[in-house]
Length: 615
Image 1 (cartoon, rainbow, N blue to C red):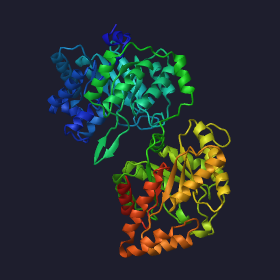
Image 2 (image 1 turned 180 degrees about the vertical axis):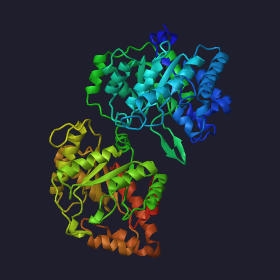
Image 3 (image 1 turned 90 degrees about the horizontal axis):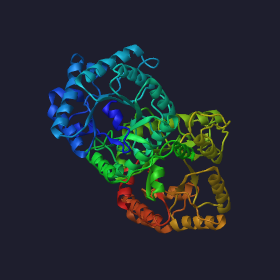
């Protein structure tokens, strides 16, 4: 039997290496450069990465050949050096292993071709198989111990890669795919289907790599094991989801986090454990130490795995906002209006400023004051992709029939939006198009019920399956200073029954009055409000602004003392408004879970100052 396959029979999982690209980039190699070419042009740099992982305790190292296929090399004008680059990658790894005097296996690394294959692209399956065969042939001739097909997104492509690799019957084949936040491949295949397809294609070991962090991958690993109980499993998670910080890609999961998860992977049935994007030799060393010192772990029976999967386990990790609120963090949410035209440059600049100042989430209003503006979910998508900060989509029920409501929810989820703030919406009679249809089929509590008890369980309003559950974190509106307290408490109870996860409030200037409402609700309910409340803060910027809010906006009451402070401040009224807002936030911290800041006149700089001053 092949050495790799025989080692898999050991009770303790094998430890593979971590990211190659992460370390090369850290050492100055740009992402636009062909990393595979470094096997020829900078072999010492590649060898040093291998050496670090071997010293950290890796038992399997992957060659630096992830993109060394015909299609990807052609982009760099290197297609004529395919065999040379792959052979050099193996020889480099072999020299490092020999110099280390350690028994380390060398895996020939094969990644996606970088092109779409039929039926979703123009490259035919046999052409793809031949492209993979070229690379496998070069790696096999150089003497790899196994082939690893990894980070695949297309099941059709992965199957062709397996068939190409299995033509060399004496070399074991590992095939792993990567998944999106909703635990599906980019083409929508679920882990169970992937596991069965990879086994049927002939892979000796199957699994998952890249994707998100350990928490997601252990969930996917369990689903794969339930579908293929006898399969040997490989798992290499990223160090969390990547974030863009100061022009660099950063990963949050520390080595200690991986150290804590390695036993969970072992318990879940993993035969090989390692790291992918963002992981370093420190991550591998932390896992090595745990594997070497921990007592033997009993692998969970498949029946236990199945029970865990059906125990109301979410389809994906909660949104960042949900996680922060669950952890008790005081959250800063900031409202932004979509642009009236096509330009998004100012929007992106403002969102970047708010992120730098410490905002946790950007709330994007939908047609505020019934004015024509860019679609809110398009704005959310732009902000999340280009700025890297999570958003909350305001979702009015007004003007949407039941068909459009559900279609828009599916669209929002497909764009990666998870936080939804359900509101009735402003009547069209006050906006740009008073003659526009104002009909609706659902009130806010009804839409929350549809989201939480329908979509989040995998069915639509009619009870028909939507294929997989959504994972929306649904919020609703709350008035902490209502004219009719009993009516507001009744509405609040209705929204809680529907399943509301959090609440955003109207602006307040009297925190004592707001707190008194929550106390009254607790007395009426027999228990305090357990859902997070983000309290509305609308900074005052001038005397005229303050008097307008006091006299013309229903529900807003500004204390006389605050009005006098703004009046006395004169030309520095905006700065005084910042002070008042900061003072309000400090008082709210005693009983609220966060604040919902509403910039006036696009003064995002003012809101940024408030966040920084109140933290």
